[in-house]
Image (tube, rainbow, N blue to C red; front, side, top):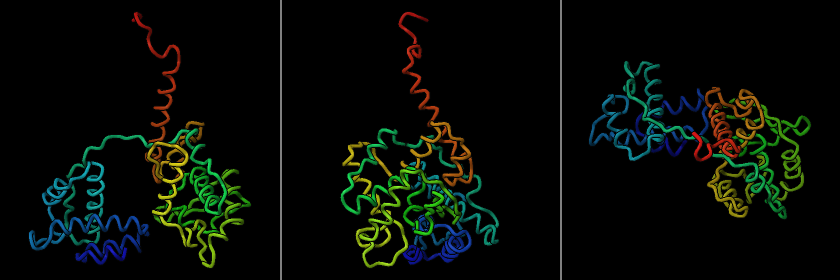
Length: 306
């Protein structure tokens, strides 16, 4: 957040980002993303050309800016949401009378179903050869991600006191600093316990961090570090799909639904505020049903029969 603050000149934007941090308690990554989007808006309407501050932009200005972006509709929709939220707050604190984003239509988005791994692909991914302490760490991380459906940010920020081995529970802090409790299955629990008690001390070395998952220097693992590890494991396992930590989250939810779990339970486990966010997995499940049905001998009409 410090780096983005140094780039922004507009005081209203800085004030808004501080509000997101201290009042809304959003994550650093979210604030940086919002800040970067608003900085790009500020940069586009630079004083030398337009002589305008963000707070004085009109509806036409916003439309012009969105049109100028060489981005897909999904990204444009995200930018518009960020800008709209900024102006909503400015309106709330009575810095402006009208929100210039009002009446601007959201770019049309294609509905895309979340990508996920099949159970067979999950088994390949989790079939890690365990020889070194980092192998046990990687195994514990992937087992935990798939067993709990947690976000990678929640796993990377996980501390030792958030794991309850006796009750088989994980206590994570999600978006908006909201805490939720997630059960851990026996397999993930076994590998997590093995890693923490037997192999983590070798990785930790002389550092004093309480983070569960550590890099080779004994410090908390970064997002970039985990992506690199995941890519290497995928290459070794022979999985051709592009895989991200979020695909493991999607796989967790999809497999639960396919095996009869209630949608509201999945909502709680994933930490979704709205059920509508979780309902996307029911579409995935329906697509799977349609696909599987094509294997039925009567699913397609025989030639010559109308």
